Image 1: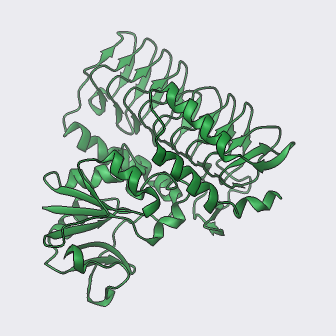
Image 2: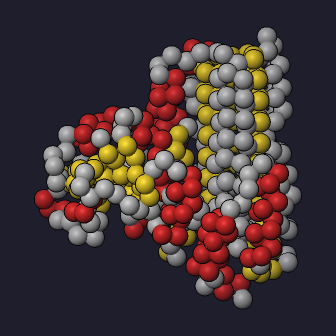
Image 3: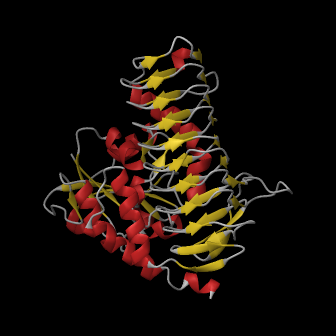
Length: 405
């Protein structure tokens, strides 16, 4: 079977989290959306259709797959990269007849077609099979569903058979250990308390959980991540690979290679990769009037329909010590924020400064230089394609930054 995971026009409402990654590489629970789809079709040959601006990077990350080229002679299952798949929708996709389209509210969810006959901009939704699929439209939807997705992914990752394999101190305490998985090479140190009474906890390979940490499931801790001593990792939290996390974190998603290792509260938030939150950075995730949180998205103010939303922060952005971020704040990619007082609720990509120092454009050459140093410290080399993507994001967000002129 051939499957092709594609992006559509709706990715624009998922900025800044898709500035440097395809939509299907957003984390939802323990797994990326792409990993959920490929696990549902384990024997399939996978290809991708993505924006031209990220195609080279996607190809470099997936050398075994075709990117933006498909074999027109072979029938393919096209699957929307915004689809958070489950077993029910997997069966619906499998059952599609040749030439048939599965749609939701006018969006293509999946289609069984030859590549030369698949056109997102030219299909008749009235002739498609309609299904109430879960297509992600906004980043805060991923925050809201994260706990449920962690539970679903726990079954995939453990194949229904969780185990305690890693190095576990005799002075660590597990509650409902049958709902906890500690992978090979993971190190759970003295004084750690993991409470899986209300949700599963998955600690991936070579992760380190330092002394006196409290973890309350559902929680996912990725490979080679360090949870600092005394941390409180609360339900609904996913932490990707090679992160450092401390302080209090609740119902938040942190992509790989990001640091929030000091005291400070991060709640109902979504962080990209290569993010660093300085000591005592704090996010608010609840308005004083307990009303719905609204956020600026694609240039428009949108009611999230949620009472709890904290921070959405793009890749390569950073905060200084004691940074305060208000409820429903969006920070773009490659921002450097510091200073006293609350920052505005919307910070465009490549912004430098703070409330008491004013804001200015973060010079592209300096941003690239810093990113190279940060990545090199983790043994990752910034590629020419990475630099091109940074240039593209810098140019495409230039008009947004004029609000500070």
